[in-house]
Image: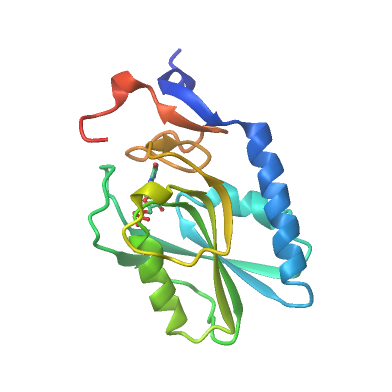
Length: 184
Ligand code: IMP
Ligand code: MG
């Protein structure tokens, strides 16, 4: 039997640490949005587990919607080309919107998303990212909530993929060095 776990070189953030941090973020967001009605916007596909765990920690009334944005294709480096593959179903005009993203790398995806959603006149627009790699930033994006700052390594698991695989790992890890292609 082959296991996806065998392809992991190192676990960076285990399940328990993830759970605790998501609880903390949920409490912080619930306090900040007290008395308001929140719209969570998940960025597909990487944010699926994070947004579903985070949403269950929120105590304020909230709704959920999703967007899909093209980013890296099957490779690991940002092309800089950002395109909407699936748009929101809910009208965000006048809404308190919190974009939930898996990871901020160059910042290109979120900076594009921020401009696009901002043009639709939400009452407020904030970003919550589970992970950030500050060393890789090419454009500055104001991020209100961050789960963890991580070093410049390509990570997989808890929704994050390498060529669409490994999203099902319940922790954040790095690929085994033998499996890392040249260039990452
Ligand atoms: P950015 O536009 O460069 O900030 O890239 C953001 C997107 O790239 C994220 O939403 C991820 O889908 C993907 N990405 C960036 N770094 C990683 C990584 O280490 N593992 C998996 N996906 C990543
Ligand atoms: Mg991705």
